[in-house]
Image 1 (cartoon, rainbow, N blue to C red):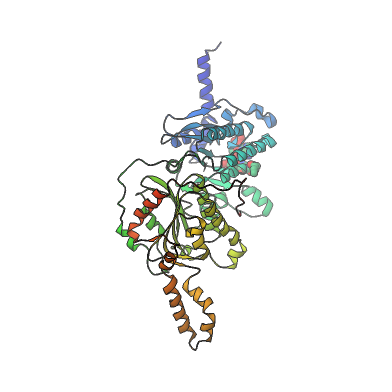
Image 2 (cartoon, rainbow, N blue to C red):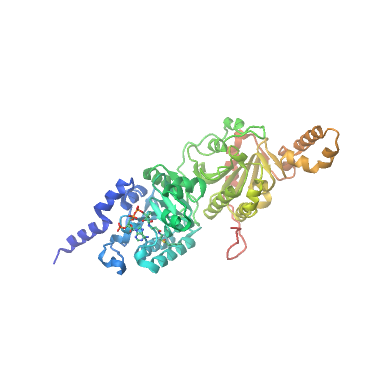
Length: 514
Ligand code: HXC
C-alpha cells in the first residue's frame, strides 16, 4: 500500500504540472507565461484556492483515453485582488492547445456559478484553440453553457477576459459577452476562423496579427478595451481596473483610502478650453486637472478616439468619465463612438458608477457613409443608454453642445441631475453657420451682397446662442462657473446625488437599438 500522503503529494504535483515541462518551455519560448504563473501575477500572493484540481477529460474518442489531460487544460479557483475576492479561470495551452472539452467547460461554468453566488468579479484568462475537436458536440454544448452563464452574470458581477495567446472560435465569443477584454501586443490573437480557413473559403491571405492582433481589435474592430505591452503590465492593469469596481450590482464602488486630494480650485483649467470654437485641445487635459491625481484609467483608448471614456476618482469615489475629444474629428459623434459611449454608460449604470460628461460636441457626423452605416440606430443607442441610466448623471458643457449630441450628453429631458456650463459654452440646435444658412436662406439669397448678409446673420445667431445664458435663463443649465472651480462643483454635484434612487417600470428588458 503506498503511503496515502505520499500518493496525494505525487498526484497534486502531477496535476499542478498541467501540460508538463515541455509545454512550459514552449510557452516561455513563445514569450508566454503558464496558466499558474499568470494566476500568480493576477492574484494577491497566497490567496489562490483551486477548484477541481484532479478533474480530467472523460472522452475516449480519437485516442483521447490514451492522452493525459491534467485539470483538463484549465485552472480555476478563487483569490484576492487588493484584498477583494474574485474568481478566476486560466486556460493551459499546453494541454491540447487549451481547447475546450466537456470537463474543461464544466470547471469554467462552476467558477462563474460560484462567482455569481458570492457576488464577486470573474476573470477569464484565455489561451485556446476553441472547441475541442475530438469531443465534438459535447465541446459545443460546453461553450453554450459558458455563454449562457456569461449572459446571466452580465450586469450582476463584473466579468473580465484576458486574451493571452491565439484564441479561436468559441474562445472569443465568451470574451465578447463579458464587460472588458484585455490583449497584449504581439501575443494575443482573436478570430472566429484562422488564416487557413479564410484562405480556403475566400482566397484571402492574411497573417494572424493582421487578422486578429491587439492593434486590430483595439483600434479597428473595437473588441478589445485594454492593450498592454507584456503580460506583467496586463495583470497590473487588471488589478487597477478591479480597484474601481464594486464586487456586484448591489454594492457601491470601493472608496479609495483618504489622501491629500488636489485643491478644489485649479487655475490651470481656465486656459485649457480655447474660446475659439474651432480650435482643438485634448479633453484629457481637463479630466486630469479635475479628478484625483494620477487616477484616470482610459477604456478603449485607441478606438473611436473622438470620444474619451474611462474611470477616475473624485475624493476617492470612483466615477465613470466621458469626454468628447475635440482633437480627433472635432469630437463628433459617429457610429463607432456611439457604440463605445453607449456600452460604457450601460456598464457604469449596471455597477453604480456616477457618470460625468465633459461636453464639447458639434453633433453627429453628416454623410452617406454614416447614414448608410446606420448612424440613426447607433446614435439612438446613446440616447437609450443615457435615458435608462439611473446612476447620478452630471454634465459639464465646456464649449459646443449642438443638436442631438446636446440632448444625449447634457439634456435635462434625458434625466440629467446637474448641468454645469463654462462661460464658453454654446448651446443650440446646430452651429451658427449651418443655422444661419437655413433660417435666413431667403434674406441671404435675395441680398445684393449675399456674403455680407450671411456673415451678419451668422453673427446675429451667434450672439444669441453661442453663450450659455440663453439656456440658463430657460432653466436648462443649472449654473455657469469659472473653469477653475470645476472640481468643487463636481464634488457638490456628486454629493447631492449620492443617495439618488430611481425606479423604472417593471419589464423583462428594454429593446436597445442594437
Ligand atoms: C483540439 C486543438 C485545437 C482544437 C489546437 N489544438 N486547437 N486540439 N481542438 N480546437 C491542439 C493541436 O492539435 C496541437 O496538439 C496543440 O493544440 C497546439 O496546436 P498547434 O496548432 O500546434 O499550435 P499553434 O501553431 O500555436 O496554432 C494555434 C492555433 C491552431 C492557431 C489555435 O491550433 C488552430 O488554428 N486551432 C484550431 C482553431 C479553430 O479553428 N478553432 C475553432 C474551433 S470551432 P498537439 O497534440 O499536436 O500538441 C469552435 C466552435 C465554437 O470553437 C463556436 C461558438 C460560437
